[in-house]
View: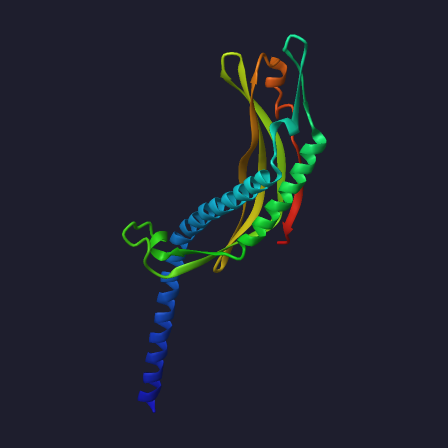
Length: 225
C-alpha cells in the first residue's frame, strides 16, 4: 500500500512539474513574441486597409468621372489674371458622402478575410519565414471612418502652380489574435484630382492651411466594439 501511494505521488509530481515547465516556456515565448506578432499584424492590417480604401476611392472617382472643374471654379479678369478660386462645396460634399459610403462597404469586406502569420516569421528568421504553426489574425472595422477633403498648392514651374485635391481618411480597426487584441487608426491619403494653373496664384491662397476647400468631410460608423 505504501509503495502504491509513493508511485501515485511520483506520477503526480512529474505531471505537475511538466505543467509548470510548459507554462513557464509559454510565458517566456509569449512575452518575447507577442510584441513582434502584434507589430507584424499591425503592419499587415495597415497595408490591407490602405489598399482597400484606395481601391474603393479610385474606382468611385473613375465611375463618377470626377473632374477638377467640377470641384473648383477659377475666375480670371479680362487680362487673364486669376482673381478668385471658388470651391464648389455642394458638389464636394456630395462626392465626400458617396466616397464615404464606398469606403465603408470596402472596409466591411475586410473582416471576411483572415491574415495568417507563421511562427518562423514571428521569430524574425528569413529562412523559416514560411514555416511553423500559423497564427490567425482578424482585422475588424470598429468605431468610425473620418473623411476629410483637403487641397494643397505647390510650385510646378515658371508661372505654374499645381493644385491637388485629396481625400484624407482615418479608419479605426481592431487587430485580433488569440488571447490579444489591439485598436489602431489607419491614416490614408488618396488623390482625387488635380490641375496645373497657369498664371499667378495669390500667395494668400497658397498659404491657407487646408487649402481653399478648408476641410470638407464627415464621419461614418463602421461597427461597435
